[in-house]
Length: 148
Image (cartoon, rainbow, N blue to C red; front, side, top):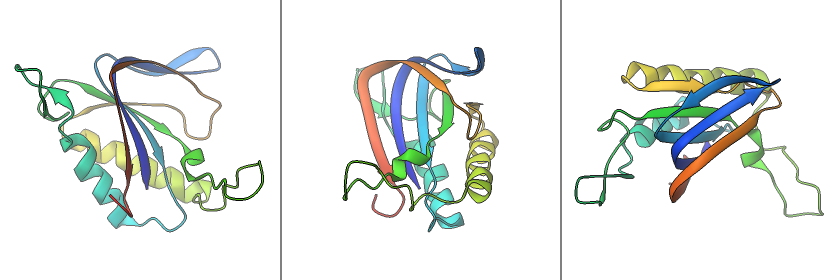
């Protein structure tokens, strides 16, 4: 699995003119599922993302995690994180997981994060989404369950 985490002041997802997910301070997580991903990759992301210490403590040091704060997570499915641009000018998405199984792992990620006590908002899987955000910092971190 691959994820791009953006610490945000606010973020939202709009589909067909309607907001489907919205958070105040917290994380925007763009989550991509690869065709080789398993439950172990899901477990890695569920363990790593909520506990990553990228929020400031009282001294202004990045020392707090999403779990340490009352911040929320906005999850957006993002198969394009598996773009292969090695050949030609048009990206290939052959390494992305098929939609049905990817949807299951994405939904499981959201549910497992909720089970940890996090507020989780979502986009709509496979929809044409408009994502708006105010990046905080900016802090943007890329994770890959195979290499992180």
